[in-house]
Amino acid sequence: MKITSIEAMVLSVGEVDTSRADGTQDAFLVRIHTDEGLVGVGEGDTSPYVAREIVNMPSSHSIARGLAEVLIGEDPRRVRPLWDKLFLASYHYGRDGAALHAMSAIDMALWDLLGKIAGLSVAQLMGGEESHDIEIYASEVMPETPDEVAEIATRVVNEGFGALKLGWGPLGRDVGRDVELASAARSVLGPDRKLMIDGGMAYSLRAARDFCQRSESLNLFWFEEPFEGDDFRSYAKLCDDVGVRIACGEAHSNTAPFRQLVDAGVSILQPDLGRCGGFTIGRDIAAMVREYSASAVVIPHCFSTDVLLAATLQFVATLPGERLIEFPVTSSKRAGTLLSKEFTPDHGVLHLPDGPGLGITLNDDEVERRRVGKQH
Ligand SMILES: [Mg+2]
Image (cartoon, rainbow, N blue to C red; front, top):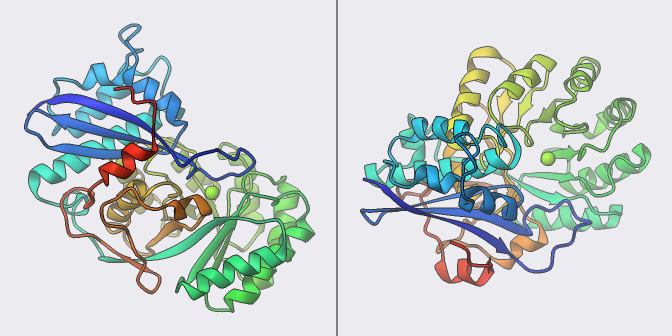
């Protein structure tokens, strides 16, 4: 079997609001076609325009290559060797960032293909699922006022969610205000539902400590990414000083930074399968955490389309211990699904789909409707 072409697609739901930290406003998908007619689908969470160019561009030299050129003619079943080949082929401009995001989409599509060839789900290919039913948490951008927080919390409680994460927006400007916003969510959620706050990299070390201390009575399930992901020193200091579990990792690619986060004491590791390097690297990260830390867990980041959600579901189903999946409930998500069959939460739980690979089928009409500039 050979790869015959790669479609790198930019999708958009319309006008982008750059004041919102809402990555669901556009998307980057790839479709990998083969000479036997099977097609694999994957998503990278990135700047879709840059990633499309990384796939489609002509090569400059041996380690600055366009990714499609590298893949065409290859056997798609050689997933790991192809990952390594792409890493070296993009070494000069890659190793992190958009190149790894584009590779993540490709890796996801190759695992989807492998599943379709084998007649197995990706979870089965990775060694088998621990569970078919995964608890989800509603995820939304933090609004400006406690009243708006209460509205969102009321909506997610009515929709049957048992957990809510709010992040970015106004957080980090005023710790007192941040505690008020989080308190408004806790009041509606009651004591038993999970509440997480995502600091959106907007805190100083002092402000993060202050927030953790002043929100202690809110019993946060975790406090996420108060600092930039590479500020390992601040993470280590914060983890030493506060009781709440600290979460980080959505911005990172490859395994090394996750090891550094574990060393810093971060207990919730959040690789995004559309950024870290796909299933191939997600699996490496999970293996590292399993071997290296008794207290850290992998709870992936997932804030984009239902393609990434499907991939994350396959991955989370294979993880030991605490299993939780992020489910964006932001306004652009309500524009509808890209899939022929939508994921519908069932009392705060998502069920692993039955089909092979990612277990999904794209709704081609919807993909074409959202597609921007049909380069191929
Ligand atoms: Mg986050």
